[in-house]
Figure 1 (tube, rainbow, N blue to C red):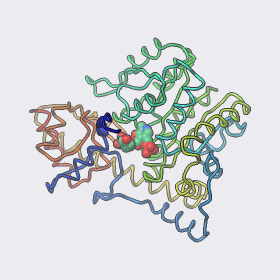
Figure 2: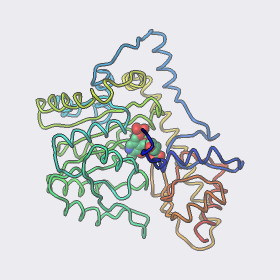
Figure 3: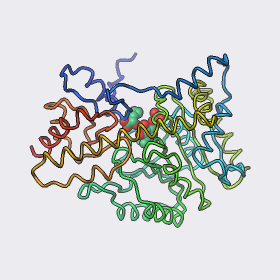
Figure 4: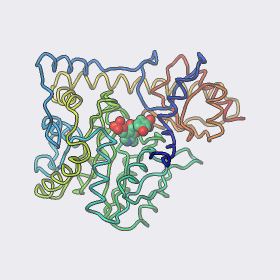
Length: 400
Ligand code: PLP
Ligand code: TYF
């Protein structure tokens, strides 16, 4: 009965980790998946997460089903963290927030909402973007297109290309934007560029749709990393925002995040929320509680909240330190005169090296450095001790 089922292709990012595990070379380095590692290259559980979990044990919290929309205390703090607790849209009750299965599951809820209520509307995604965006909208039966984003000549933002693509798109398109720390390029618009992007989106009656997977991880400041979203909201626009706590709280496998829809009235928000629940129900009935409680305890408690911010600054700081060291090593070792400063301009977990597929293959086959074939490296998987080795590998791969 299953003979006609064909083999599915491996995930281009998660597949890299499988290949890494099979490699026995002692210099091997996994810069594929975007997951934070310590300087010893070990996974890291935040101290505040352990404290919140201890608190939950002490209290003897139960495992009853959550409502379809998730844990109320979580939904409250997650919207406040994103928009700012004093934001009028929160005070006026204009945000529909439902807990989702991390960033991915929250995006998928929005995909279903768009399919049902905006028939024929396209979602425009950046070229390139996180690979799963295409999968999510394909499976949601939502048509998507791309806008220019990355300019290989400057290894920077193709701002003019982006603006003109937003201008020629059909009015009322959904524009998927990375709130901060663009994946995979590490290139974000400047505040001035964000304003111009918002101008065009408003002119064209487009609907901004933010994917916020790295709040606090880009600059080290939660507020600063939410400033793009908040600027759009302050203009009075209706905005969709998917949130994830995989990276900033290190809760990868807890699958905790949220979908927020800022509406023009509290009434519309109530109706949108009811539809998001209707979509969630036949998909997974109700979301998992453990991660939601951790977030509610950390964000909702002033002491733990401050400790979290300190730990996040530590993580973001370690990544900045290896970024600098990698740049220094490349600049010293490379005698070709190539300008490596683009590495310092990129932010967040990733660096887009500009290595093409053949060069990325050389990184892996000859140097045992595992990375995605688009030339992206996760600096979160790098430590100071291996920067020089990585620089050798990159220079060799570039010039061969
Ligand atoms: N969006 C972007 C841009 C990402 O990089 C990721 C991965 O971290 C996600 C969404 C969703 O990840 P998760 O489903 O683990 O929250
Ligand atoms: O881009 C990354 O590495 C992260 C992690 O299917 C990730 O976003 C990668 C692939 C995937 C889910 C998460």
